[in-house]
Length: 96
Image 1 (cartoon, helix red, strand yellow):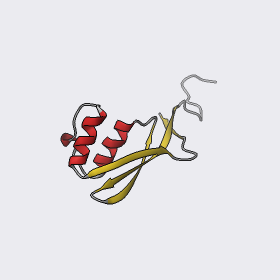
Image 2 (cartoon, helix red, strand yellow):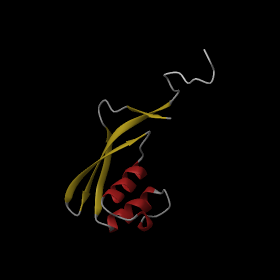
Image 3 (cartoon, one colour):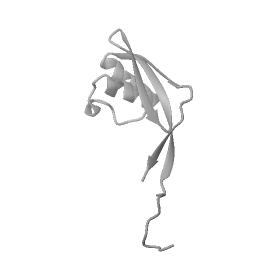
Image 4 (cartoon, helix red, strand yellow):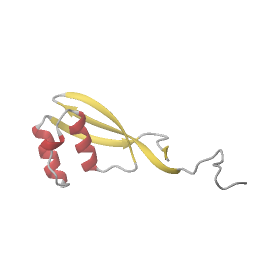
């Protein structure tokens, strides 16, 4: 087979992503956010809830200290943030 002819298959790297549900309360209303990521932490969940609620990223602290993030989010009306891994959550995403 000639080397300059590309075969029908291309090599792709595959990254496994998990599907997460982030539950939070915004000014008394329950909200749910779906998010795909390789992993999730409490800090990630609070940041994503704030961004989903419309808080600009410039208004969020740049630190990853949970108590600072919670205080900043609560000042924007966000509370009771929790997250869980969805059942059958692994998704595969290919990148060329």
